Length: 524
Image 1 (cartoon, rainbow, N blue to C red):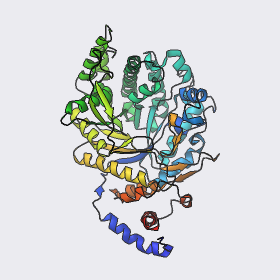
Image 2 (image 1 turned 120 degrees about the vertical axis):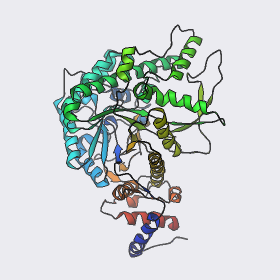
Image 3 (image 1 turned 135 degrees about the horizontal axis):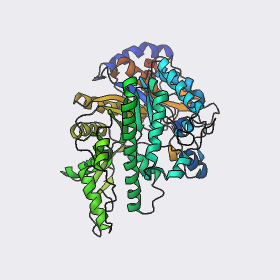
Image 4 (image 1 turned 90 degrees about the vertical axis):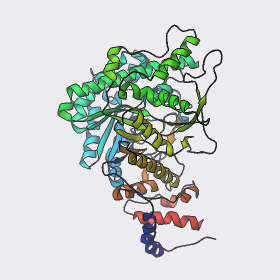
C-alpha cells in the first residue's frame, strides 16, 4: 500500500524526527579533525591540451587503448574542472568542507618534465585555484604526483624503474614549492606508491617474478624521490613557508583466514603498508626484515644471485628515514590471508600468502570489500608499529549507482567514520578524514564512475554538477561536529536513481531530506 504525505506534514514531523535520531548514540567529532574531499588532476581537470600542456602518460594510454581503458571514456574533458574551478570551490564551500585535496598535473606545469620550461599558464591555474580555496576558508591539500607522468619524460628515462627520474621529480617539487608554497601548508609528495607501481607496470610484465622485479625498482625510486622532495622543502622552504610534507600509502586490513594465524596478517601488513612506511617511520629505516628475507629466499629459488628487492645504501637509509611530517593513508579494502605452500622450492607470491574475500562480506560496485572495522584496525597497527605518527586519512569512499539518493554511500561513510573515531578514542593520532571523491570522475581504466558526493552529467557538454544526498548529510555532520546516526535500513531500499531529486539545492533544509528518506521506506 502506498502512503502519501503533504509537504506541510513533512515539515511538521521533521524536527521531531531529527530529535529522535540525534538522541541516539552519536559520537562527537574532535575539534581538530579536518573533514574534506579529494580529487586528482587527470581524473577531473580536462583541458588535456590547453595552452602548452604536454601529453601525460594517461593521455597516451587512453588515447591509444580507448576500448581497453574505460570503454572510450577519456580525461580530455573529464569533469572540466580546469574551466569550472570557481563553481567547484563554491560547491566545496556550500558543503562545509574544511579541506580539499587535489593534485598537480606534472605535464601542465613542466611540459617537458624539466624546469627548463615552466608553463606560466599552468602555474597560474593552480595559483588561481588555491587562492579561490583560501578566499573561501578552505585548506588546500596538494598532491605533487598522482599517477600522471609526463609522457616524453617517461619515454626518455624509462619511467620510475630508472633512477635518473628521481632528480627530475626533485626539480619538479622545487618548482612547486617555490611557486605555490607560500599559499600551501600541506603537501603530499606521491599518492599510493605501491598501487602506482603495481598498476603502471602490470601490463608490461609477462611473468610474475618479472612484474615484481619492476615494481620493486619502481617503489625504490619513488621512495628516493619522496625523500629528495622532503629534504628540499626542509632545507630551502620550511623556515619561510612553515608547511608540512608527507606521502600517501594504500593501507588495507588483513584478517587471518585460519584461526590463530596472527603471523600471516603481520606479513601481509609488511608487504603492503610496511613496504612504504618502514623505510620512513621506523627507527631502523630500510624495508621490513620479513620482506627482505622472503624476497631473497624466493630469488635464490629462481636461480638469481641477488635479491629482486633492491638494496638501499647506508646513506640512503639514513636520508629516507624520518622524511615525513605525517602519513597520508588511503583505505578501501580488507582481505583474508593464509599461508601459501611452496611449489618447486618457491612461493607463487613473494609474500608467501594468498589473499581472498569472505563470501559473507558486502562489496561496492567496484568490487571493494565493505569492512568498516578495517580502517580502525589499520590505524591501530600504524600506532603500535610506528610510534603513532600523525595520520591524515586522504582517501576513503565508495562508488554507488544511485545518482542522487545515495543511501548506501551515507551508510558506508557513517560506518567507516565511526570506526575512525573509535580509533582516535584509542589514542590514534588521526588529524583528517577525506572522502573519495568530491565528484563522479574518470576512475582510470574503469571510465566514468559514480564515486562522488556530487553527481556529474557526463552527457552534458557543461558537465552539470548536482549534489547528492550524501553531501547534505556530510554538511550536517560537519556543522554539528557530531557523527549523526543513519538508519542503515534505508540503504537497502533501492539503488535506483530518483530523477525528482535532481534539482535539489543547498538551500533546502537537511532535515526535510532526511525525513524524505524515511518516508520512502513506507511509500514503497
